[in-house]
Image (cartoon, rainbow, N blue to C red):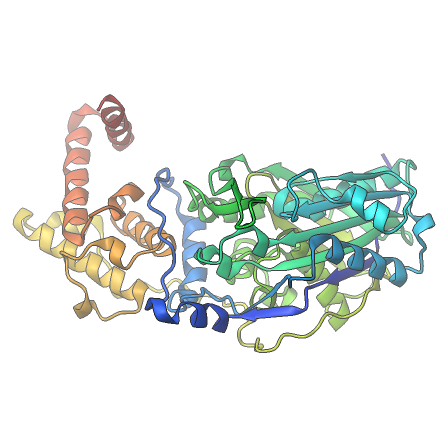
Length: 501
């Protein structure tokens, strides 16, 4: 099939007026003692033996560990007189004006409303009524990948000649979806965006895509229905049973999708002029650039400015790149998104003469240094190292002390505390959150080549108990290796023992 030049003709992004900084939470909780992130004490599967992806994630996270807000600086959040429908309609009207189109010129509307106020099926019909549109309008959802999935759907329908001038509208109301008492709220922002899909000049538009499901991340978040203070139902999002899977799969998904998209487009990564990543965390752009081996100057990190704005992120990245001159007509651009429990998607486009909507209000406190993408400096060996061979070569009576010292040093490094402030008898839950647990677990498994369940870090566990557990793991593994089975059998045997109990 010969593809016609179809792609984004105009683009707009809109944000609420209110900008919420970290001061909001600091003032809110100043009478509640030190700010603490919510703990997640639920179980997660063991990692695979290949920790390369998790190592990249850990290296990217490291600069943000001392910050309780993990790199969040500002978020745009809805005011009392604003709504998702308002943002969506403003973005739609802005993009129509930029494209010099009228409502009657639109032949189809595709809408992705993530966490709208109402409990229902999306805002498509309401947008059509508000804008006085006389065309089909339907809803589409694929969490944070919704914009790229909508782009693929719209471009395919334009390719067939079924429709022309397709309006895509996307919104994300993260502040609506979480409790302010939950530290997850520190990373959530609100935003709306819209774009027109139509025929472009020859050789422009979408060249190739790669989309995969993300079923592996189904337990990363939980979504529950609850009643607010007025008795109205609302959706609430919380950390799920397996949040660590987002870190475990991040590198794999970005590589599969981006390499698949450039293969489909018949280009190489070196030919891409700009990369538009969705950045749900401050370090996500760093993970993506490391995974693909690209120069960070070829992308943007908008997380400090907007926090997590879900499916609007690729639109914001494309908008700011084009508005600043970082992305120009006929440049090759690769957009990548990862939606939990939905899809990961990458699309390669040759950028057209895209008309842009009005410029959003600038940030009030974000600095260029905060939006800088951190590049880990080589793979230096940490000071607090211990190999499995070194540990097992020591006398059995010395191994417990050696292992406790190692664990204390690693933990102190992650927490940015002097090791003298920690003792082996302290409960781990007194100073661990799910991110620190992930980092600690990764270091142990990488250095000592042993699998450890995340359950060992919660409850009443201490460094002493964790060290004893690890030594028991080594002893059991040696026993199995001597003729009773493999290390994999050990893990399976433990699982069977838990089930039998």
